Length: 228
Length: 225
Image (cartoon, rainbow over all chains, first blue to last red; front, side, top):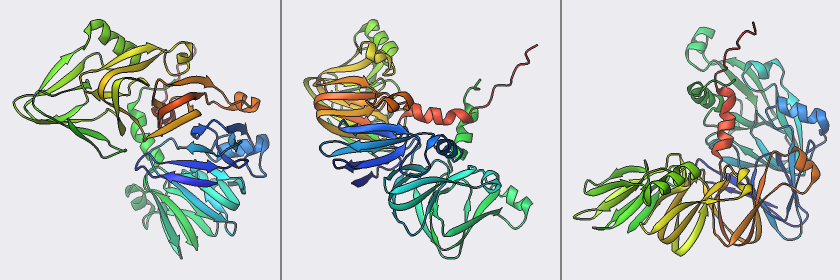
């Protein structure tokens, strides 16, 4: 098993090389190419404990797909190519099992079978910050593949860091976050165009994307004809 | 003709140097800049029928432009409508199939025609594909990055991600063999069989427009009475 990220500027993708019998899991629909000895199965259960109907529904609340695709390599070596929808980078996060990784809305693409994919309810905090109501929680040992809109910047938080909503790709669960205002007062905060921001505290890694997908959507959306 | 493809793959642009009398054909609207001694001739290249066939069946332009350097060498820059990659392909009395809209430019002895793709075309975003024949250099483009795959045996692509393929490859539309995947997966797959090259794009404009869809304004609901 080897995940090769094809770093192609705005249009990066990942090529997962599999040997006979090896498996890889991705969100349904992320595959755009594969060798024909790869068997594709679609289930609600990826590689974790949380499968079934409920697991699928909970994932939808986290901005992910209801279904997982599982790729099994049969016979000789094979490959699966995975790409996100938007322009931007893909990144492999190595999980050693010591810390869980929390992926925010839609950034999860795929993972090796040693990782558990679960959801973590964020409640009002997630709703208020414009993020999804729950996040994807990844635990265990293995490799995790995430995508971002634009570039991914990895930041080591040592005490505290403020990130605008919509720019967080993933973070280690050793970090706590709270919703807060960007400027000192609510009025300035609103006028600054930043509104609510996420304040991370603690120690751990956070992965930040350079662009905000929903801002892009709200730039283009109003120029399109009305939907019925 | 000397040429270079710059800024690959995000914002690829083709820059060609034409010697006096040398010609380059491009789809309408592709020219971004050119020296002032380059003469532009707009024609359907093969008559109205050929132009109609090209524009109605394959989504290419009705007219094509022929650029010719006059009196001295000239430079021309060609860019496709969307951000993405450009590939070159040498034809020697050869043939290449492309998805609709993939044609960017070629030397004048390369012909671009529509080919009926049979019923399988119904699911492959239209009944027709582009068939390019002749001798010369061809430039094609797509949204996203383009990767070249050497197929020996068979290879599977998601529907809508194949940019071009050599005629030595046949393709079939398939779904996953597993029954669950057949029922729940929304993916229709293209399985290429044979020996040859296929070019795959890493992003789909259709998937992107599906993503943007929820951001469109909502039509106000009309009252029922």
